[in-house]
Length: 375
Image (tube, rainbow, N blue to C red):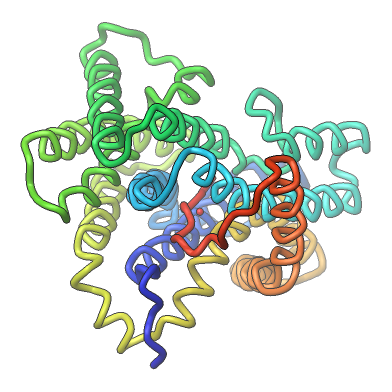
């Protein structure tokens, strides 16, 4: 097996990819059978996989943990300008490509009028978090961008590890106060885009990721506080989300499954160093690198376009389970094609534009990319 590059963390690639598969399973096997009648009333999709796939939404929370972990690494390597450049080159090309593909599929399927498709495509291109974008899964991008902006601000003010650690502690405490207040009834259970963008609702997960990375350099009271408070807040959020999801999907399910998956994911991230050699030996760095890179476009392209393909297949006689599996395989193939062939030239073009605007060159980004659900 090929040896991983010094900047490749194999456990992160593996967790990232498995999280994407969890989200795909949730949308295809648990959510689509519920919403299918609104798209194609005559189609009845099987729901027998919903008993386990319903918990796949936990992949998004784990994405945020991975993002906190990876951004903590990236923030140690440069100033605010180079940090933002790297994030833009990771985030933008795949988002543009996936939004364009999804928009073409939506137009071809006739599910929206062209002005609606154009408006959603435009919102995706400029990362407008307040407008519906081409794919519903893009809701996490605004949260990621907010986190990047906060880290960039800390770097601009001259901070590195200490500043990022302070961000992690602050996010953990703010999220804990919010979720404890909700759990005790001090504040109403409301959904708010602004609370999401201010990292109040999901900030604890970024904090957990930051703590898991910084603890590798040694245990300190601040790092343990961040991890402990973040886990408390994250647990309350997962329990709340599990109730919301189970109710919406009309399933008699509790939080045990998503909590178990989350705990396993956090443990894998915490053990990333110890898992490096076994994963290199058992799987190899090459396949895991492709899987990790394909996670972001797979997440962005699978939902709306995938729903169209599954419904089209079932309308043309393909059995429902096979339609779901075949569409998941197709989405993965498209994501790999984007990573291998479509994204690199677009990234080079964007890098040239950024460097021209800044009037100075910058080194190639060799650091691990942040995972987005919203990866």
